[in-house]
Image (tube, rainbow, N blue to C red; front, side, top):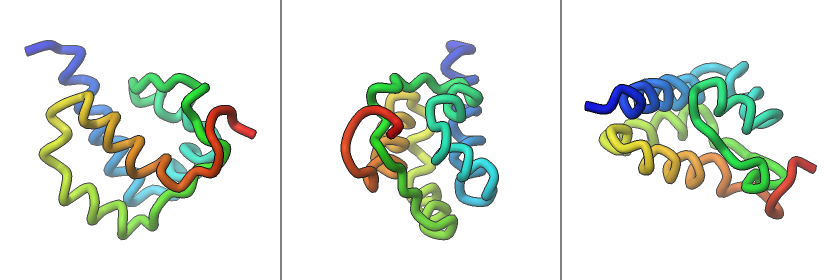
Length: 97
């Protein structure tokens, strides 16, 4: 088993769980998505960040997490989930402004 993939999975699950419960982590993701994801070992190209990020409610996030928990064994699926859930509400593309 690849240690880096295991760490990525553990870190992604920690982040995703916190986004369903922790207002501080949610605010950090909205204000600094690249830095927040990097803090959990997830790299995101700043050019891919939409102009605004609208997270679902914590309750909606917890429900989605529960439905898709099996995805978290695959790092590529984790990133797909992150883009689908977190960045689908953004207006515009690229940049932070």
